[in-house]
Image (cartoon, rainbow, N blue to C red; front, side, top):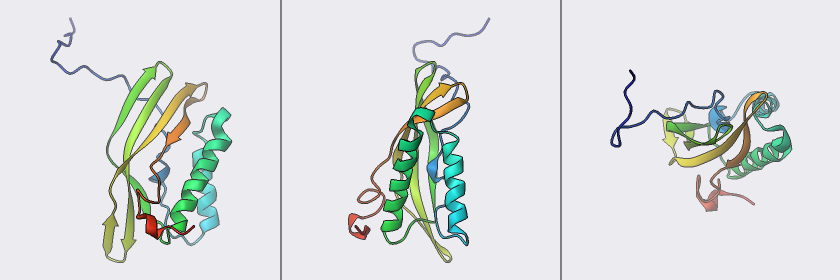
Length: 152
């Protein structure tokens, strides 16, 4: 007979969505020999996991965020998640996924890692699996990098 969790025992969490939300920073964002190819590849990978009803809006949100990164004078070499994902289920077909994300810059043999900040994705399940419905990102200018570094 399986043991039941008592009031002071940790219960097993619900299973995670089968498809993790796109950790937008999973793709290196720094210099590349073929920037047009890199951008197209990023958008293709991103498009596959966006909810159809919100696709254009979410893609534009990412483009705007990327614009803030490049406008800060020195975009990071990559963005990376730090620590475990936190998944909060809001029902059978909705969840919120939070990742702590930081920017990383490579400067020759030196590596500079920024402070991690929470990035949140609301994901919903549809016929094709889990899809991103909304994204809550910290401001690039003034949070991920100093505001005075941003060019407007």
